[in-house]
Length: 123
Image (tube, rainbow, N blue to C red; front, side, top):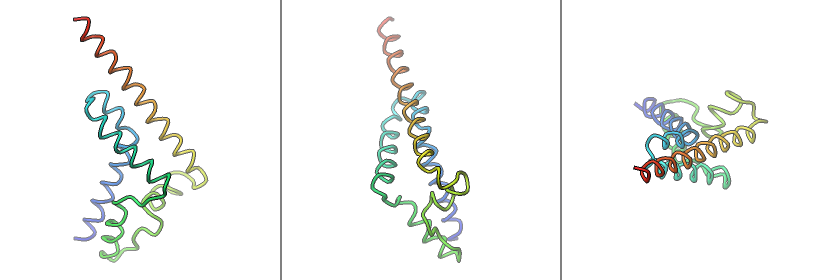
């Protein structure tokens, strides 16, 4: 049971990272989701800037240990992404790339929002 909980927490963590990175594009279709994305980005920025642990890391670590596994010795990102998906020396580049993707999605959101407003006003 603990393994299932650990895996579910891991999936939720990955889903959060995907939403953090791409949620601005979701808001292009569903504009009200921009608030949730702003919160996700703010939380992600706080974690990076102040080196907080994500609240999902602790439970996953606990569940893994209860299941007889190693746990997350270096945290979620260090366990699943750094030196797995990208080399450790590129962490800052990856963070910059995520920030650029978020900025592009927000810029596109603003452009689309203005276009919708103009379309409503011209009716």
